[in-house]
Length: 283
Image 1 (cartoon, rainbow, N blue to C red):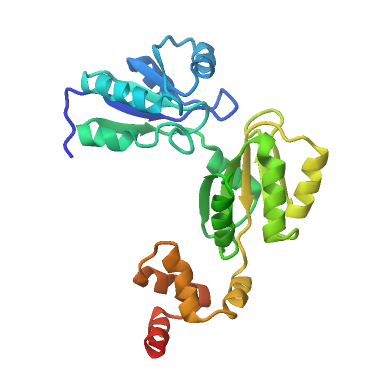
Image 2: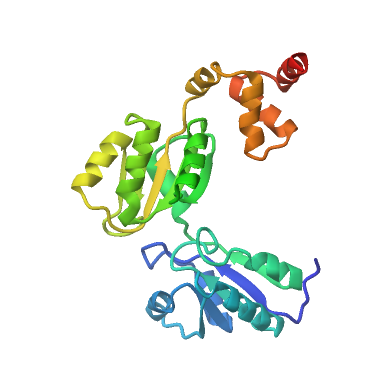
């Protein structure tokens, strides 16, 4: 897609996740440069702008007016206006309004660029102290029973760390659910109020975390980091099912045969060729 030079640019800007001093010179300059700032909550963004004595025209852009405002933002960009997109905290679009705006701009030949800033996802993972060769980010932990069951089925076989955002009024319920399904001895970390005065990072078993927050009411923005299941435990689980049944687990998740075979081989610590040979033999 070629960008049309007489159109505006969408700047996707990170903002502080707590401490207002976590702002870059480039971010401040972009806020002064653009014609509009599209923000999740105008009152919240005004606090940041007022701190740095920046005057700007704001566009309210949140989950309840997303479609209507997306049309307006694209129209303004096509007219040659430059717009900064921000969320209340951190990098926009990650579990915030804005998902889909970049593909729309791409279709219209509108340039999008990012002005990097803080993100609770990475900061929470670092502060958790949980080591991992990688991690999975699940956004906010599912609320519905169907989504929760699907997530638990994954977590029982996931060797990487899993990271979620959670609201303070839901934290105890979510931790209790995880304890019930993963076991009281499964380790996790709860990181909250990152970069703020009362920043707290607690690493413990799910059982101990449930007990702690029963006595201490959770407040502020929260990141949950779950430790992955050890490879030895995963191997023990798969010893009880056939290769064919193991394949079905991944096929039901939407993987094609080739990727499912690759995942089964990794789970069992064998080559993909061995899995293929067993499946051919069982036909």
